[in-house]
Image 1 (cartoon, rainbow, N blue to C red):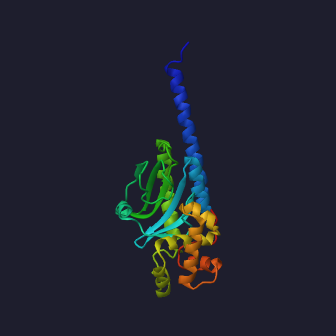
Image 2 (image 1 turned 30 degrees about the vertical axis):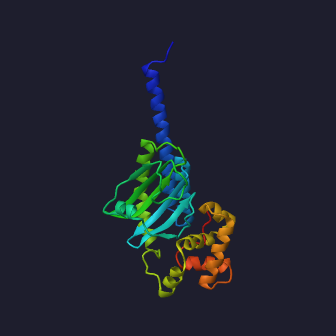
Image 3 (image 1 turned 90 degrees about the horizontal axis):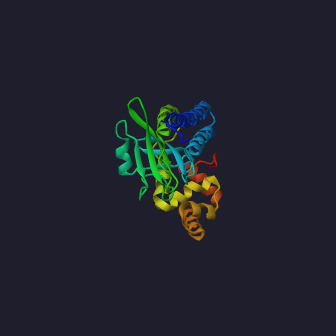
Length: 255
């Protein structure tokens, strides 16, 4: 005897209920973590979301006119505290309230660093009529898009993240103009050198940095030596400390 309509309907309903339950549990975990004062809890939020979505990369960014600041990241070379200047395509997304952008199999990433992602999903975090941050998700190569239930869950989570983003920015250096000495140091470095410098506070080896940036360890070594010379520093430890001072990295969180 073949299965007919009622059985199929029951199974579909069960699958839908299971999806809802999983999304609710993820949202519950994230909400609980967001109530904690420990900055590490923010990392746990993006880790929970990455696990739920099965995503390659999740990044939570604060936003002001001065640019982005990484508040938490999973699967990304962006260190906590790293500051970024949005590309024009992303700046357009952030005007006004901002709209969610979903880009399947993008040839060029607008923001994320995952290689050949299955999708790039950018969710503006808005509060009281203005964008205060951005949640960015990258899928693994050939990963299917998020389900409708996942999208609804992220919509709710985005409201919570927006409120925490505003609170976090009250104690952040984002938007504070760099001092003359900081501007001078930053101007000495190339974009690649600033990128490498931002990873030093996380204790990454040359090999690990090379894997993250898809360059050879020897090339990383050369860049580090140039950074030390340009900033008149003695070793990597001093460079890591200077990166934190310049707002390019954070020494307290290892992802």
